[in-house]
Amino acid sequence: MREQIQAIHIKHKEYGYPRMTIALREAGFFVNHKKVYRLMRELQIQSIIRKKRRFFKGKSSRVFPNIVERQFQNRKQNEVLVTDITYLPFKDKFLYLSVVQDLYNNEIVAWKLSHRNDLQLVLKTLDLATQKRDVYGTIIHSDQGFQYTSPAYSS
Image (tube, rainbow, N blue to C red; front, side, top):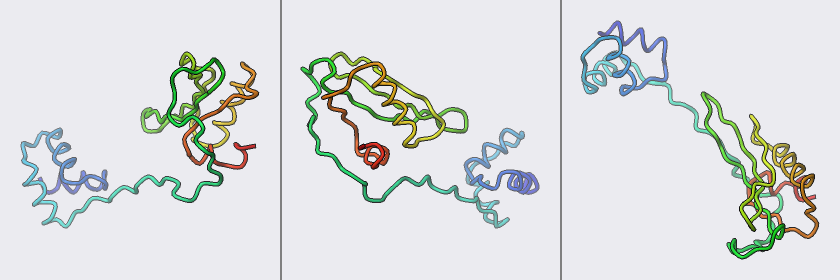
């Protein structure tokens, strides 16, 4: 079993004792996680810890006042459009869905899907919305994400 643990570790250095236990069971070993933990300690095998995903922690470029103030009901058509980005897990990557929605009837005015969560995704989605509707005088409400507080978005 020790040889099998070492072989799995060479192939999957990120496996700790829980995943190592699963891999051993799939290889036909009937083993308890405590035994795998003990054997890995004896063999001085430790998993490589994954890097945490880094998110932007800096100060926003430009913060706009909250005009809507969570008053999402009883709006006129084209009075308030809301926008946001959703992370969609897809296989081993993420896809990012940017949406512009009218609060009057919850209609999706525009949407765009991308492999990157960047300012271009937001600008293209907003461009699609402006092609479909006249947004002059419309409040466009969003969270304070880095895309929505950037100078390019505010212009």
